[in-house]
Picture 1: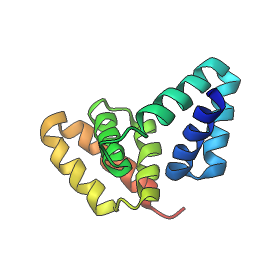
Picture 2: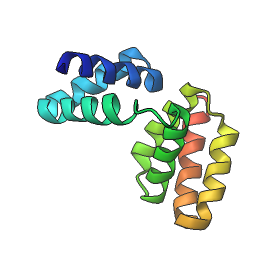
Picture 3: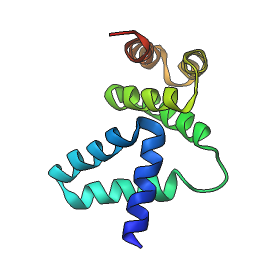
Length: 123
């Protein structure tokens, strides 16, 4: 069962960030703590992100909105990259930022604008 959950979590993360990045992130977390890495992969990604009822793109929007409202810039950037990989457009993310600015405040919107610029600008 754990192996099934492990692969299910990796598969979901691969949709967001690609197969290599998904496995690398899990490895990096494992170096910190194997239990934590498995918990995040199996509980959050394999069981929560794959629940029926909401498409993955909606879950991605919810995650970005939460991270924006909580002012979690580095993780917001990570999930913006995932959203773009899912086919969510920069324009849609922009509209989410503008909409959410009225609920979470202008400073969180300014940080989200910086994040979006970072993840969408060429190197």
